[in-house]
Image (cartoon, rainbow, N blue to C red):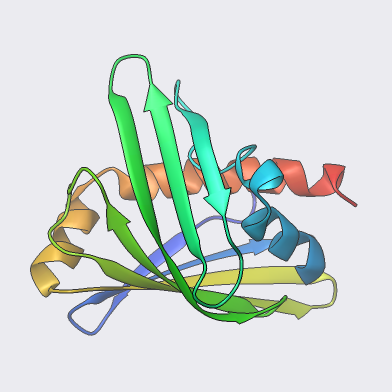
Length: 159
């Protein structure tokens, strides 16, 4: 893929993940927020399936996502949307059922479009530096990259 995922730390508690797509912001927003599209790209790789994708896309609305793998079992998470400005971005809380890092997080996703290309920037702020560092030591980066590669392949089919 020509548009690689970049992940950098900011401060002691944040990760900033950035990826560009050759698609209008409207399409990236739809793929990022609609359950029928999310289930086609997010976390779907290496035998993982997106089994539950409940989204109540409004401020105060909740989301619930569950992935399943034949060998690794279930990975479930959820949260609440605290800010929402379509198609510019959203802010949501994040907590995994299977606590693979301590505490919770806040995700801020921003979409910016320039000359028909859209950049997705996700800033995740963890409760502690230890939580952020635990995520950095996990296979999160390869999982995010695989999902965003799926998204890149999906976007041309939506236009």
